[in-house]
Image 1 (spheres, helix red, strand yellow):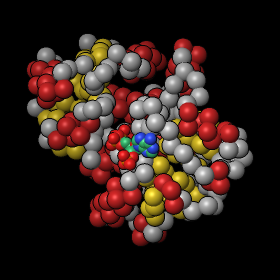
Image 2: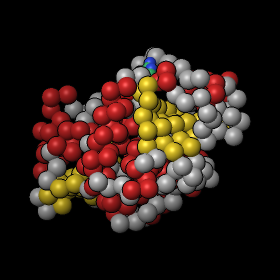
Image 3: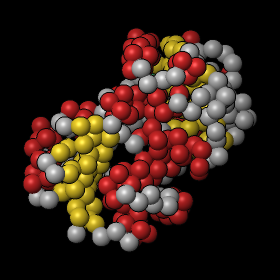
Length: 279
Ligand code: ATR
């Protein structure tokens, strides 16, 4: 049986084993998928041992995504731009790194939520790893404007500069990107407001002006939980009628990883439904 897994710290909460078991069942693939939670200083060692034991691939989660990219021999453009890998593929002594987070978000927005980014006004909050992973794929969908905002302005500016330098955007797409501080957001409404900060996880709260939301705004939190996240609650309070958490993104990024490993794109709708009911 081909062996896969997810590696992170902490890892006990990960829903990836359940998702991949459902994909494997649905597509008739014979594979195992386990949780691996090494000590912080033993990540590389643990990955190499997993390969020696015959492992075929790994999902990588916090806090190891950057180190996963660093230890790879080859990588995709999207992993390079994200500066991090959430998927490793092991083949004939080669470690290949990829990042499926961005495509996972775009697929959740378009396929599951029916939200098309083209010509839309998008506000992306955060300039850490989560924002970095989705910025390029979002811009490649040709929104009318993408405003990148962060509590620390210099980090947003730095991320904007790196994206300009990566050379992967078409001229028309690049000029749609602007950045500003969290307390300096243009007071016009947005079609999509995306939370890519870690505020909910750390007990903090992102405070946004009410003017960014209208009843038609989709407020999307890349985090997820059993109930509406604090960001989703704030958006509803400010009048957004559509809110979503990141569970759909989790399932879609997993589907893309599964496809990289097995060459088959699994159906995601029923898996997402199962997960929602199990939450
Ligand atoms: P990750 O890899 O999850 O993105 P990170 O690199 O530590 O983690 O980045 C966390 C992001 O959440 C940053 O954009 C951070 O803002 P700063 O760059 O100003 O630190 C943002 N963040 C965390 N707590 C926040 C809060 N209470 N309000 C606003 N932004 C917050």
